[in-house]
Image (cartoon, rainbow, N blue to C red):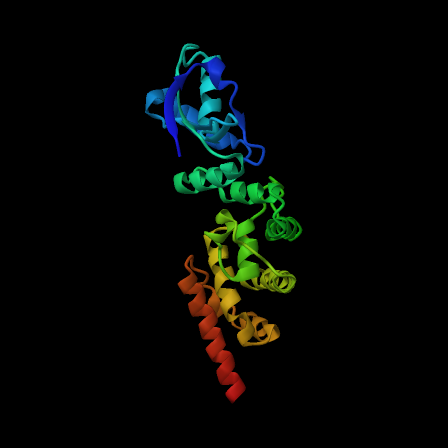
Length: 260
């Protein structure tokens, strides 16, 4: 791939555009970049642009920060912007954007998911619809950012750290139906444990429950927890190991009861 580093003016940079399937501007990330650039603008990596289309492959937040800092008087209107021009076929642009941001970790998980949705990936569209329509995964404060990781655990038993960004996530109708059941179970467990929703403990609890849930009837699990609340008050802890321990203990007690 041919690469050329140039320093361009603000007027030249204004011709660069976002890829139509790229992520939305994250205002918090934008403010963070602006603060960094106010301290040392010349240490930021160059903007990456496809010479064939003028689409930004990487650095959209940095470029917008520059424009805003110039408008605010922090940077000179004559500031020259480092740009790495690459020669990339149009059909390879989107994959390059995803790969670049996986490596730089600038994108949030929902950015990747939304990008795959824009491509029309049916599995990501199903994930988004499911997450928006279930109370434990919906996000009333920002409906465009459901709690996809929680939804992924209920569907697959994993946080899908790699599958969700890289586009390999798939889900069957059977898995969606099972996730519906697990969601209802977890709502009841939260009530029995008198716990809030969300946070690290919740993610770990979901992973553990997915592993243990089919070892006994759900009514057996809930009856035991309901009848032994005092002994379970020290729970939960944050790690999946702690949740594995509590569900393993209940599993053993239920096995003993069945054998008696």
